[in-house]
Every structure is written in C-alpha cells, then in structure tokens.
Image (cartoon, rainbow, N blue to C red):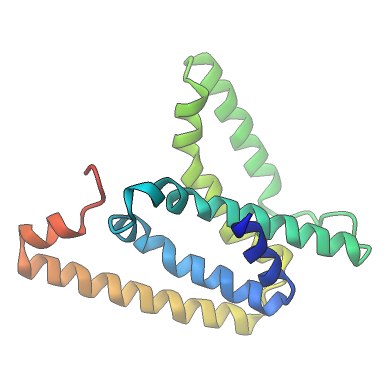
Length: 168
C-alpha cells in the first residue's frame, strides 16, 4: 500500500532513492527511541514499515533493471559468505529446534542491514560523491548520539529512563 507507493515514487528517480536510503540509514540508530512516541495502534506498523519499504525499494530496483534489459544480477563479494552463513544458520535452527519465529527475530537486524547497507546500495550504483554524502550524514548521527550519551551521563537515571525503548 503506502510503503510500496513511497518506494515506487522514490525509485522513479535513482537520486531520490539514494536520499531515501540515506534517510533510512540515519533513522535506524534512533528507531527504538522514536518508536517510544508511536501511538500503540501504529506501533507495529511503524516498527515494520521499514522492512516493507526496503522490500519495495529492492523490488523497484529489480523492476527497473528488468525494464532496462539488465536481467541478470551482478555477483557481489558478499554473495557466497552470506549464503554459507544462512545455510549454517538454517542447520543450527533445525538441530537446536529453534522456532521459526525466534530465528526470524534473531536474524532480522542482520539481514535488514545486509539488504540496506549492501545490496540496495550496490544495485543503485552509489557514486563516490554519494558515499561521501552518506558518510557525512552518518558522522552527524554519531555526533548526535555522542551528545545524547554525554547528556545522559550528566543528567543521570532520568535521562536513561526517557531514552530507553518501550519494555526495556
């Protein structure tokens, strides 16, 4: 629905998609804190819309490649190690009789960042200029996180309670 539409609009321009992904990269470190302010009725949607947006972006990229006649996906340096990791993980889940839900919850942050940080960026051909822009944005995130950490240290437990994710 809405997430797919946003991804489609963003993908209409590769540059817009790049900026949308940079925004997601900047949002991610603050996600748990920001979700504290999401209304209970929207919490689940807000928590998992990220995944829908990533899936829609990836689908838009694949559709664009298909439309341009580039049907094969290029090989990446991460493909084989990722495949081995996923196979070993699957065997571990089976041997240890871990429920599918528990395994999905455990692996979702890792897989989310592999998709965001590598595959989508790889397929939309980030330039060095884009990489420098993203790096500057991420340094700004690090600075904000550092200031929050210093403020939390100075303010004490009250700040820690305010900044803690729901249910922590």
